[in-house]
Amino acid sequence: MSKPKNVFRIDIEPSDEHPNRHSTHGWQVRVKRHNEQYTKYFSDKKFGGRDEALEKSVEYRDELLEELPEPQDPVRKSALARSKTGVIGLNFCHKDDGSGTLKPYVQISWLKDDGKRRSAAFSVNKWNLRRAVWKACQQLHEAREQQDREVPEPEEMFQTAFPNILEQHRRLKRKADARGNEVDDSSMPDPNEIDAENVAIPE
Image (cartoon, rainbow, N blue to C red):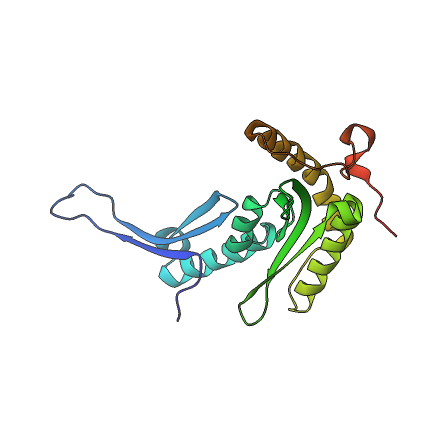
């Protein structure tokens, strides 16, 4: 029988080094979800033998896994932690297009099936922020859907990213001002005049 996942054998006997150690034989279920550990021990003696204790531990494990949320993909978790917009692969930045003045852009990036990274940038000065974010969400959704990957709908990405982009712009503007860099944010909306959490999606 192959070793069941999340179930570990424990066999402890007294030894010359530890003569008073209690004899322990059984199975322990260990499942970790979102940094929280769930454990339970099943003694051979209590459950009528090694095989019987294993059977009970597997039953418990199966019930526990049904109740707990699915484990988070570690790659996705790491990427989401790095994302400042709340949408993996979508970012906002100020960059110099050669004029010497920093201008706002919405950027996306994704990996193709051949392993090569692709990217696209949408000028806020050209499209305005709403349309730039919406175009970025649509293209990112299409690129990932072509790879048969689970991806949020463009509308969900838009509503997540938009308010975070406004906050990111504020931080980048303060840093640019501190360095003496000029920022052309004439096309950026005034955050005091819009409800960032309920911005209408462009038609």
